[in-house]
Amino acid sequence: MELEEFRTALDAWLNENAAALVPEHEGLGTLDDQMAQLSKVKRMTYDAGWMRYGWPERIGGLGGSALLRGYLGEALTTRDLVEPGIYSMTEVLAPTMIDYAPPELAAEMVPRLLRGDETWCQGFSEPGTGSNLASLSCRAVRADGGWRVSGQKVWTSLAQYAHRCVLLTRTGTPESAHRGITALFVDMDSPGITIRPIETMHGAPEFCEVFFDDVLVPLDRTLGEENQGWSVAMDLLPYERSTALWHRAAFLHRRLQQVLDRTDTNTLDPAQLGEVTQLLYAFRARSRATQHRLAGGEQLGPETSIDKVLLATTEQAVFDLALDSLPADVAIGEDGPAPRWRSEYLYSRAATIYGGSAEIQRNVIARRLLALGDDR
Ligand SMILES: Cc1cc2nc3c(=O)[nH]c(=O)nc-3n(C[C@H](O)[C@H](O)[C@H](O)COP(=O)(O)OP(=O)(O)OC[C@H]3O[C@@H](n4cnc5c(N)ncnc54)[C@H](O)[C@@H]3O)c2cc1C
Image 1: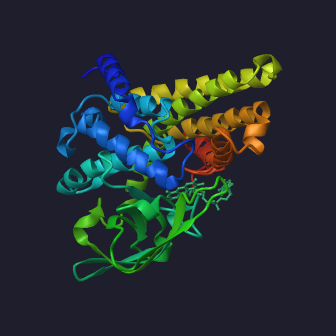
Image 2: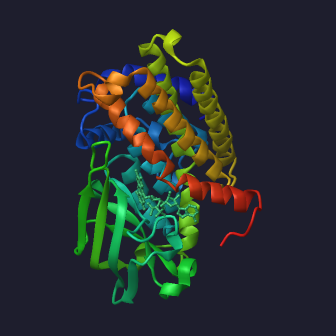
């Protein structure tokens, strides 16, 4: 199906099913509410076919361009039917699973994620390992029947809801750095896994500490080759900065419009409004070009760091404007949309950290794209 046809038909379906799709909770809701809403919307859109477009037939998709996935996320976000961060975990994890899992495993598992029957998480960061991902130490050793995993992950988004985890483990020597990492696809109900949610300053336990104590992971759950997990990570990170960011751009566009709707625009600082608007449109233009490159079959790489820098700058600028324009809502309000504005304002502070910090993205841009120094 072509994008225009998809867009028209999807919009009509969303209008027809508006009452059934709308969240059951009022306002922001809890993370439990948001996760229940996400599962409902994914199930309905999958069963009606929309969620299957843009994904390959070998994992149960209906084929077509990746732009269709981009529009579906945009439409659901713009209508406030899903929270874009948790919705976009599918865009972060499913493409790499399709690229690197044994084909039968991808065919079995990816439809469960697309339909909202399952939640997956990304186990990369550790207490001593964030930006310097190649130094990770969560260890996997070969044992009868598979791998034995011991160690700790942290900041693992949605781990308390997750059925599976795309996990990076150390299989080489501690000095082997990026050459001694293996990626595994782990069942989160395996014996030996302990999950402790962490409440963030925006008021939700979005991420967790995850402890692995001698957890058995079957050999056929290895993603890619042994000690080649770095290529899995490098495959995944650009996905985290492509379609997922297009959805986030749609969300920021809607929030900027809502700020303008709720404010006497004559009271706004025109320079600030101009700055926010041009940032948002620059980010969308950049992200649009990335969607088209992805849809054209190009392998995305370090140039997606530009998209991430633009997202972080735009997200904070939009919510800075919200704070300046709606100070009572963002700072102290308890009624109506106020808790949502405050929560989203606080979450926007994380935009320069999640998915790779702004400083690291700028290092990548300087070294890998502008050749300003080496890439050690
Ligand atoms: C909301 C949220 C959700 C997340 N979800 C997940 C998830 O699901 N799974 C997961 O694995 N991780 C997740 N993370 C973790 C995230 O990937 C890391 O926080 C991020 O990579 C930064 O790592 P760090 O926190 O260890 O900071 P550090 O790497 O310790 O960095 C601290 C500061 O030093 C700066 N810095 C570090 N090295 C350099 C350098 N070489 N040059 C210049 N500056 C430098 C950084 O920019 C940063 O400002 C999440 C984080 C957040 C905020």
